[in-house]
Image (cartoon, rainbow, N blue to C red):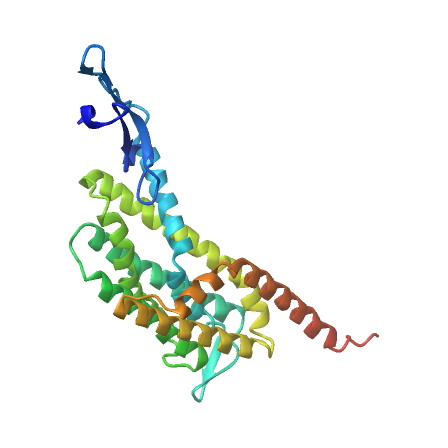
Length: 296
């Protein structure tokens, strides 16, 4: 084959090297050149150094892959964040009502996040190990459907008090999507076990980081009257995005709405900053309206 190449050289690249931390999504790494010695008409040997890799490098790469996966997974984060929108509120007569208190709000938040984590961790393990498989199209459709359900619930309470169970149930579906990333790596049992742990740890770390960023403004705004419109608008946005994703995943063709959703996701940090500023402004405004304590 080298005789047919004009330069008599072939660049050799590695697409995946778990021990060196090169996994899914990383560009191929060039490891050397196979070259023909024209004078002596022989192929020069190619030496590849395999000593640089380690188990820890591969493990940390899987943590980073999990962080990257959830950071770029707009649908996964949208499901969880929209499900958390009404978490601080009490439900009464088919409507969302007043703020339930700090302890009530934090308890529900922890229950929902923990349930979602347990759900996706279970199917990530079983799916990556090859014990449970579903068609990817069905999984992606169910993920979009889960967002639609959480969006409707954000507008009107569909299952008040049962959010943790819903998070766990749909978490099972989201975990199957996570598992597809690891299954495609085709690792041996030992490396797969470490990869499942590292990948899941990365997902959970990024998930907790994003949720933590929303705690402040959700806690402050949920006491204010402006939280109602924010919650409804968030639910409507998520519902439209879910319907657009369902259409795209059902017919296999992208549409204008999904493109707009992906573009809108790039402005998420600015939206978070705006909500935080609005929350602080609302808090100090409400505080300034309180009557001053009577002086003795």
